[in-house]
Amino acid sequence: MEAYKNFYTQVTKLLKIRLPIIQAPMAGGATTPELVAAVSNAGGLGSLGAGYMTAAEIRKAIQQIRQLTNNPFSVNLFIPEKHHASNAQIEQAKKIIQASCHELNFEINSIKSPYAPSFEEQMSTILEEKVPVFSFTFGVPSENWIELLKNNGVILIGTATTLEEAEYLKARNIDAIVAQGSEAGGHRGTFLGKAEDALMSISSLVPLLVQNIRVPIIAAGGLMDANETIAVLRAGASAVQMGTAFLCCTESGIHPLYKKLLLNTTQDNTTLTRAFSGKLARGIINQFITRMQSHENDILDYPIQNALTTAMRKEASRQGNVDFMSMWAGQTAHLCKNISAAQFIQELSNEAIKLLKES
Image (tube, rainbow, N blue to C red; front, top):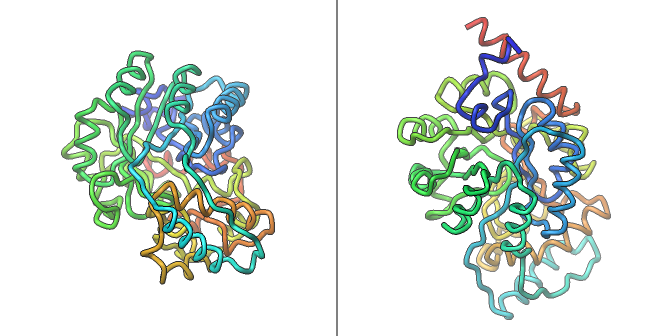
């Protein structure tokens, strides 16, 4: 325990964890109960990306996590946003998506509302299951939900991509704020203004928030190793949140071909796209993203576009065709390692301790 004293921060105290390492809550199956528990057991905070899960699926996953760890963990949800598409717009988008994935020889069906699981039911499950930490993105829960969660002793972690968003979160008594740099894989958490106008690098965003917001800041975006971890902690962050770094861990739930592609990456081959979900996100460039670039005006609001491409992504996964899967990844994905989550955290913390001693 002596060696970990260097890592005692506002966030480790708040979350009752040993190391200031949070595994990012990547929705869509990457964050299996096994991965979440392994990270929590190794001294960090494992996070279940539950945005696409039904209330029943969330409950089952929480119970599985609790069978594997007695340590704190987090569950993450997407805050619902306004969205609209006419039947004609949906049919037009469906035709474009169909043409853009013709190699799958797969018929895409029309979709109907609701386009995402019930947020109210998801939240009720989180309260009923007495989840210790609740994190969220794409906005902020209503005052009623915040009050209910706080009254039940749940720690709240929000996501900000700008100073304005961080101030908004602070004003609503959120316990800690994830500063999401532009390098981050997956969806942008922007909820005030356009996501394209909120692409500040982690090296700029973290000091800005630390200097202006008296709330513990968690750095996120392309963090993969000890050097980067120490750099953001020295810049004032109280913890790091890593997503891509855990994608190739043995407990990750991503498709084997997605994992293989990440492990064979030698440079940044990611881009920002709305093609799969309707919301700006960073992922590995493939045929679907490239083909959809000329149809940006026909991409529907999130979560409608996401619902429309779900069947395609599942079929691509079944066929083992990476050109039509959404493969979210940060800009430093070439540093991914095929090791267990426990080994990754052990190596990261050992190297960080060594760097701290040398400095």
